[in-house]
Length: 271
Image (cartoon, rainbow, N blue to C red; front, top):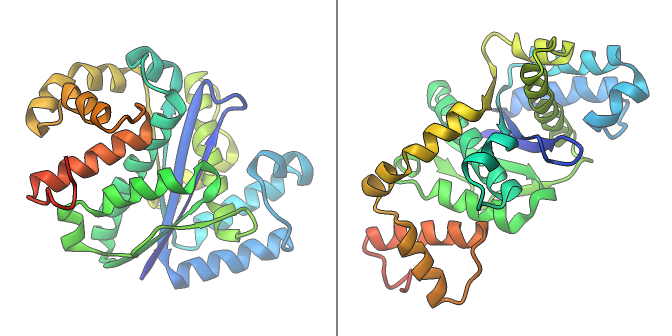
């Protein structure tokens, strides 16, 4: 069994950058990391936005070394929200940014699981984003036939809060993903904790999705529609028949419905 714990982060007004990060490892790696983490925090609830100013950055960086040294693997993905809005001005930025980051992080951790030989996966995320949205995303991800054939996923995604040291650990990585993006954007030096996490023998990675990524994605949408069979007009007709609003949940539900009908499950996913 490999456990995944994840969290999110954004700039103060969520106007510049949004990030999701998650770490994966067997119970032995999580237990060792949690034990060393609690020794340094003395059981105090950790918040990445406050710890350095409250306890000093030597303490903060020491906690980063705990994550670095105990064998966990992870991925942080940050989205340039300004570039995202410019490429897709009609989308509700934060909802879709979370959707995109979540899918990108899970996709990368699935690849890590393949490399490490993990077969049983259990996901636990911080519950602030909303269990409904994250649950739908998880359902869509785990319904992927290629992944479902290769892995045994927990039936449901689990949710926790900042009292859980493993969510606190994910919080640090998510925060450093967000702050690392800001440093790269401003051509400023990276924070020491970001450098520590990034030198974990290629076990923790950071990806920043910026203007070139989203302009390329936008320009390829027509080809994506043809290759996937997912056309915007079909989606709009689908939500009109159900008197649904165009939002993240509706789009995820449409993807699940479309997947079901393409597999001949029209009785389960009615038109």
